[in-house]
Image (cartoon, rainbow, N blue to C red):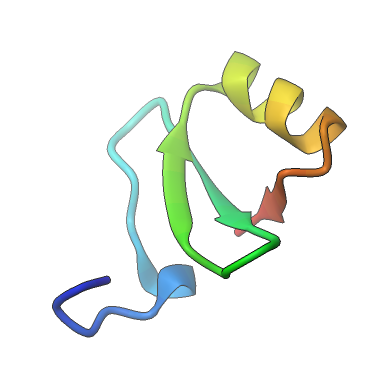
Length: 47
C-alpha cells in the first residue's frame, strides 16, 4: 500500500484471506481462523 496499491487490490498468498480494516481501510492477509476472530471483533471486513 505504501507503493500506491489500493487495499482492495492486494493479492494474498495461497491459504490467506484479505481483510480490510474498518478503522483505516488498510489491508491484511490472514489465515481463515484469524479472519473469523477479527470479523467477530468487528476489526474489518472481507476484501
